[in-house]
Length: 306
Image 1: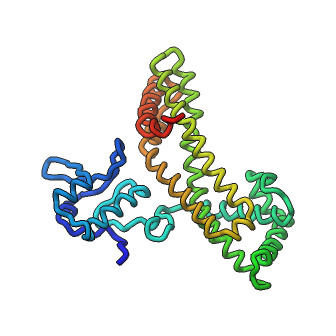
Image 2: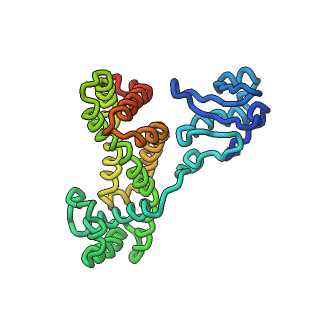
Image 3: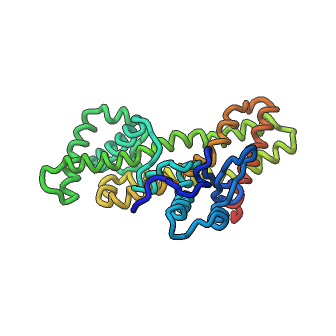
């Protein structure tokens, strides 16, 4: 039977307010429980041994599922549903309609460019709205549905199947668009560090923190940008993407989950960072110090080989 909800049976999991989380130190899963006036965090392997959870039990299977699920959500409480990423690959978090429309518009412009014989590199993605308003582009899109159906070996007149495939791909790419918006806030930290370094000029300790944070984060930010560029490259050649749609969707989902997992890491830092004024010495000093500690805690190992 497929497990779809964290319905634990042992009484330890039924304590009010219990929840699972991952340690920031070693990424191991713990159960947080309140015992009277004391709070306790228990490693899952300790739970298994101390409370006699058998390896063939539902609780044991659910503990394994918790570890996988915490890659997609920050906390899990007994009784929560298993994230849909684990169940069927779809995203468990919500996006706005604007992200779906933007993803669909991108694909439509790429389809028109393919019919027109233009290279994907020649498309100015900042001009999508203007391009889609042009009658010439609209005509190319309509022709693209029919030509793609022929190229895909579909029965004549089955252009609606191509439309459906493009909408399916757009629904997946919509999550990338939502993440693209969110990562703009993360990537702006590069600019903010430069402002802070100007503000903190003359403060040796603060300048060193800013420099070290920048050194740790530069390759991280480069990887983030590369992830979006790779998805764009995989879907810019729209006919090739349609011919290989299952693998392309798998790639998009893998990238989506990796990027979303990173947003969970950044969530606490962003609130404090964005509330700081980098033009003022004290707030900038505090923000830079916090950023360096955050960077060392989360990305030092990632960059240790550089």
